Image 1 (spheres, rainbow, N blue to C red):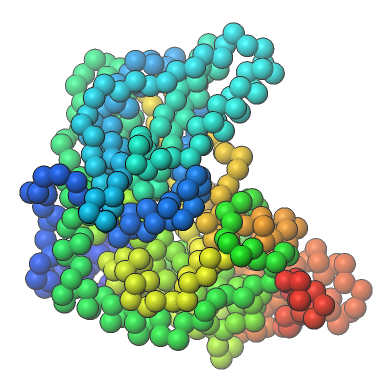
Image 2 (image 1 turned 45 degrees about the vertical axis):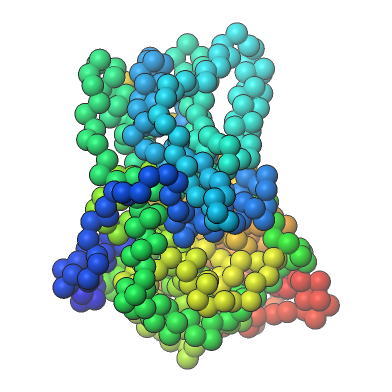
Length: 519
């Protein structure tokens, strides 16, 4: 299986890599008990999946938090048929039980309760009677108001609102709680919305087939399936893979870490030069890896240099949709994989890339075990100040799967102002038509903007070096960016920008306050 994957990973996203691994596994002899997910035969409330249960616990620990809201905002330009939009949204809510689900305690355990399908009404606000200044202010107020906390017991956990801002201009606000949705689900939502809007616009019935299962069917199946030999095989791999895992990635901070983790986030954005993005894709192709693996290798190299640790652990999301019948559902199937890389021995970057490739393929081969189940098994020391196992997330995103298209309209995604940070920071790598966008969402209670902007420049500088000379040993790769090198008065320091290794510098007085120099 690994040889087959090696030939085919050159130009695919992380999500497609996950599906490729799963389908390659299906070519092997079928594991007893593995088959299509059946519909639940029991009536009444369903259990929660492992991922849902963790979010339910987090909601109990942090009531009123919006960290797990999943908002989306789009500006629609053109002659919009409001009735067709409302009908399309109502049909999506009818089709997907997850959008009508709430959560309650039953017999001491949380359960999910699906409300019957009813008439859907799309809240509509008309701002065309306001001045431009008033309209912009009201737009912003409505967007922020829709990001209010969810009540998991009362619901609903899906919100939508349409705002008319001009004669042929509207804002479409969507939001879902993560416990009923994930990033893949938005792709499903947008595809169905486009198909249904087009059909209802022409007064045709829905062309979408009935769904084979629902989210509650998956949750009940997962509880039964992850037992016996299946669970033991998966757990055995991860026990060995994570034996002796470091308690934390000790990155230098600008502020003392709060006793209880906060989620106040900020965003640092960097678009790579188009020629650099092209060289990185070519490097991945030559080395039989993927852009996902290549960017991950450089990111883990940067984290190693900044922390002074050779054993670097990051998390990375996987779609978690291991059966064909799950691919068209709106729901929380996302799993988080633990990617642990050994950077010791001063390997060449090419050798490091090979290590990362093996780590990624192994993780995807054993991705069926939920991260929440791993926590139960490994019992890491819990601290309210940081997340267990890993504190940094790496997410390679393909925007092609998250495009909304509505007949006769120009749809423009609207970036949202405020970001939440569930980890110390998350690096989102987004594939654009001619470049790669690096979005660093970081905890603003830990890091200053200037530090994170410099971190982005350091990452770009490393990417430039490895794309030009992948045979270079990682200890010889410099973190001193050209702009920083120009400010260094010491010629010996200036020379480090051309490739000499620079040690991590820590000032004892500043380190005591949680500060250090990132170089």
